[in-house]
Amino acid sequence: MSTKASSRPSTLKVWMAASRPHTLTASIAPVVLVSWAIVNHYSKHHQTIAYTDDKFNLYSILFAAFACLIQLGTNLHNDYADFVKGADTDKRVGQARATQKGWLTPFQTAMGSTLCLVLAAIIGVLLTNMTVSQTMEQTVDWKVYQDPKAYMIFVTITSVFNAVCYTGGPYPLGYIGLGNLSIGYSGLGDVFVFLYFGLVATITVPFMYVVRIHEEMEISQVVQNELFVTSLIVAIPVGFLATGIIAVNNLRDRMTDITVGKNTLAVKFGENFTRIEYVFLILASFAFVIPFSKMKLLSVSGERNYFMYLPLLAMHKARKDLKAMNFGGKDGAALNPHVGGTAKIQLLYCVLFVLGLHLSR
Image (tube, rainbow, N blue to C red):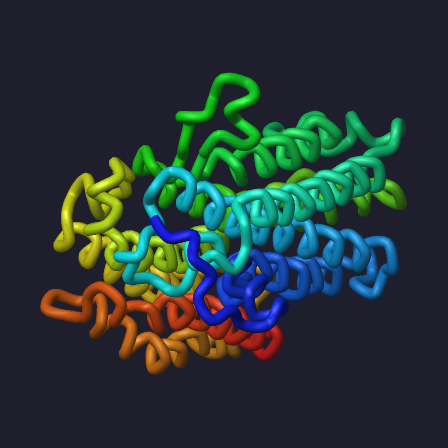
């Protein structure tokens, strides 16, 4: 374990190395997708509320900020906790970690994470207060969301808790006797990413949209359920692509993870499993486009639904990453470019998905 400060980059570059903003597409892409595409589409076709509504735009912006802060907090805590737990050493093959390099002290990285998560919690409270009014708590028909206030509180608390629980470590979980609790070290990191950067990130904005509509007019349960089902379906490929980022990380770091007892799926099931997992996640996301274009969801015009195939154009971007992660592909430090590469696939996929929805109306 090295605490020696090697040629230190600028302060900005140090914090960028620790927070890894190149992976933020995992939190931004689903919010952009559902905010612009699903909500805008339903507002136009069901004549409920204008997408330009200032309050709803504020919901989308705040939730995007919430998701980004949760991810930044998770990344910073991971930088801190992997170092103090011995997972990040001089033998690390991944991209430079600020704490391990000695560019930041563990205290500084932990405090950076805390700041991000406190800000995320504040935004979560704001969203809770903005989403709920006394007259609408019983009007939303989505059975899984009988209490809008409880849902937003649940999302806020679990997101903040899971951000520090992802890697664990003595701070802050050690203060409540949970210092050994870790999602990532238990092989559940992939599940966490799929659930929170797939399902939760994609469903929450449409949920707030339905609640917002009820402040001004009634919306039928049929429309609510259609929006809910559509959000769930769209969340699957978005979650798959986000999980692909973790799969690259796990494959790259598996040899050093073994030595410190970090039981990721790559450690538990081996190299071949992780390569198969990655290829499945990426190809399944693209395969999803074909049946989705046939579904009568989002009021897509049957005469122009061929525009829904636009996300397949992102396959060209995915070729290098699929080749690197396939059998006989790259390993170790050579996989570093493909972490950000997979994040770019997700962003391009979502942008093309939105464009396809817009053109198919």
